[in-house]
Amino acid sequence: MKKTPLAAAALLALLGGCGSAGNDAAASSAGAWITVVATTPEVADFVRNIAGDDVTVTQIIKPNVDPHEYEPTPADIQAISQAKLVVKNGVGLESWLDQTIQSAGFGGAVVDSSQGVQRRKGDPDDAEMKNGDPHIWHDPRNAKIMVSNIEKGLAAADPQHTQVYAANLTSYTAQLDKLDADNEAAYAKVPADQRKLVTNHDAFGYYVDRYRLTFVGSVIPSMDTSAELSAQQLTDLVAKIRATGTKAIFTESSLPPKTAEAIAKQAGVKVVGGEDALYGDSLGAAGTEQGTYLGAERHNTQVIVAALGG
Ligand SMILES: [Zn+2]
Image (cartoon, rainbow, N blue to C red):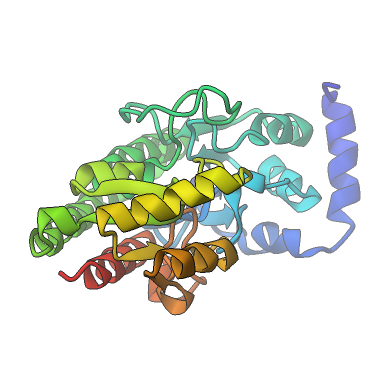
């Protein structure tokens, strides 16, 4: 049902009276240039870097939460209703967003950070993946396109501060270039026939393409996280790991490691997990180095290169 502005206003008044944690954004936005809602931890980190300290950024999906299974909350609706700008990853990752924006009565601009990114093929049988693989940020060159889109969106929403956003874009883009160059240098030390990756779900396609790794398989055989290996697929994956001489299975911070551990045991390879789990769909805790895109991606490369013998 499409809400009338009046109904939306009434809903907001109601939500506003709850005094929930969702009021953080409203409370802290006094004096801020604008308030921006960003969906995923990656996109929110990009917005914080380009927007700077004078913009209030509300991040919807918290660290180490599976974005493929996300269900929006009343606090999300409230945050969007109070925002000037909404920024999303795009490529179907936020299947819940359009409805949430409508419920919030939000009429502002939505930045699709994936605009102009060349998409890897998705999964035609999966409603959320049929338009492409959404894990675009794992190639720093895509991240550069994403932050450029974000900068344009910020400048349009807040023309008074375009120079600040442009300067932040320049310096952050240089950091993304540095990340990309450092990753390349790190992989140059791993022999080509050792660059084999088995991950928890199929989140690293762009990364694999960028740094010329071989994707052997994943514990969850999908770009989504809800699929499960059949007994036959499990046997096949174990055989493939053995046949290819793959050294390790990498778990992810936002997914349980149990099946990965079972497969590794059968295949006789190690599991890289715990503190070394990869950031496939998420970033680390806020305030830590790995709570930033740059820190999380550096962690991934460091862990993979070390396990593959670089
Ligand atoms: Zn994913």
